[in-house]
Length: 90
Length: 165
Image 1 (spheres, helix red, strand yellow):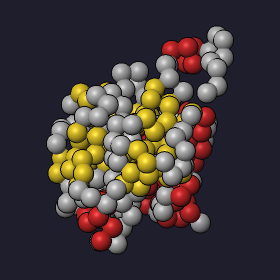
Image 2 (cartoon, one colour):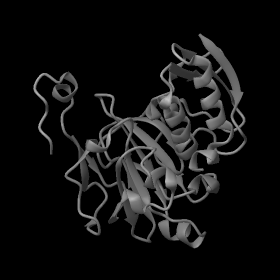
Image 3 (cartoon, one colour):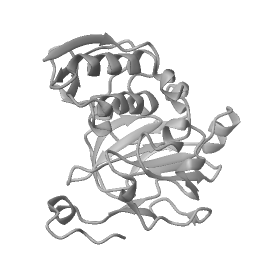
């Protein structure tokens, strides 16, 4: 299992647009990817519903976990989607 | 509407669910929503409503529970686990709640048509933002949206917008 803590940039947090970009990056990965607050329950990072319900605000720290094929690459891709969501639009 | 595939447990389990207009206004195709996250359907498939420019109340498009509530956006999860996102205007997160009055709390049970938030689409537009309201089927494929109301049709809040097949 790979694990990575990421601080969500100040601003809106993981809501509509940033959440969708985050979920899209997670969904592309062959590994299972989950997300949660430090010490909290992990939810499926490939589910937009689960990520919206997690309600992560700007400036909050979250913990990403990935299990399976390409776990490290999955976390790197998801971290990039969090830190540079606009890059998803090229 | 596509017929359920025999033996497909998911299709057998989930009944067709009407998803209703959260606001009164004109039906707009998702591709016309002026936000790439919605127009490219990366948030999910659905339909949008361009609201009448008068003070109004946004209502729940389905029956369920409020899973996530912000002044400008909310998610309702039906008893079968399907979730619908309603976003009141584009980039309205920037308003930080100004101009929105929540009438309900996260976790509350709602029916179709339950009042969720008061707002004024005319004020949103006057502030330089689009008041268009995307209504999105979450974690769904494009085929989730069946029998959509035609683009341009005027709906009252609570009228069926599309059916989640």
